[in-house]
Image 1 (cartoon, rainbow, N blue to C red):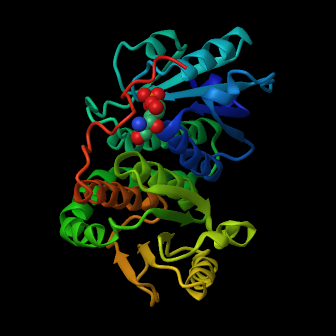
Image 2: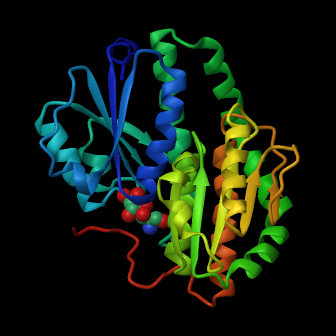
Amino acid sequence: MSAYELRDIEHVTIVGCGTAYYAGLLASYYLEQLVDDLTIDVVVASEFRYRSFHMPKRSVALIVSQSGETADTLACLREIKRRGVRTLGIVNAVGSTIAREVDGGIYVHAGPEISVASTKAFTSQVAAMTMFGVTLAQAKGTGLQKTAEFVDELSQLPNEIKKVIRTHQDEIKTIAKKYARYDHALFLGRDTLFPVAMEGALKLKEISYIQAEGYATGELKHGPLALIDDRFFELLLISEGWLFEKSISGLQEVKARGGHVIVVTNSSKQIDADVVIRLKTKLDTLAPIVLNVIQQLFAYYVAVARGNDVDQPRNLAKSVTVE
Ligand code: M6R
């Protein structure tokens, strides 16, 4: 898209299923931070395709898919195009149906993703959509300082992920073995860590078969607190930022009900939980992507400890080409 066309965009709709949807949700927080006067919605493709949706004028739709063949996402793409709205693909599989049918887009070039559980695709999708946000912000001339911060963090991201995997692998393996005996799990996060919590829960349930739910920490009192008992563990994501104290009060609510809490954080502040995984990362805004990698490792080692086939979980296919 030309700078002129980008300047014209006032609304973005992000469409995806499963992990692609959560990647879109995380990216939407970043797009909001990057671009002033932009409205964004993020939709689950299997629902959106049947809704009587209206998209504002000057919209663009980001169609997010690793395989580029997901039936529900493809159906949304066609519905959106039928309404005359411009579509951009955020796709990994080169030459796939979605890649061919969108008006334009970005290949995330994550390389072939073999395992049913989507891992590197999530990271690359978030990075690609964030780069789209940076380009949009530059075209519109908004948030110049914020844009520079994002560019700086994006360039550090690959090394930070490598470093975190190297540093934390053994620690995560040991912790995962201990928690593999639980039947249920609650993943909690605020702000950008809310979509990450939902993605963490999806990854764990998919390959370990532990029933896992992702929730916004602020929603605890609205229902999930009732779940806490000895068959449950809670994984709480806490970032160093402005919502730190609010996240800690969520932690205290869970602890007061006898929860078994793992905290994953990039903060060095005192945190009282059963296990605290402290990430040392230079990243700030993009730290949630790195925290997500920790969750992926955790899900992987829990599944291994339970003797599951991590690459090919039961009942699932890599590409969901039928409804
Ligand atoms: O190929 P897609 O990105 O369109 O696939 C979407 C979902 O089916 C996919 O992300 C699914 O949720 C993963 N198995 C999750 O790990």
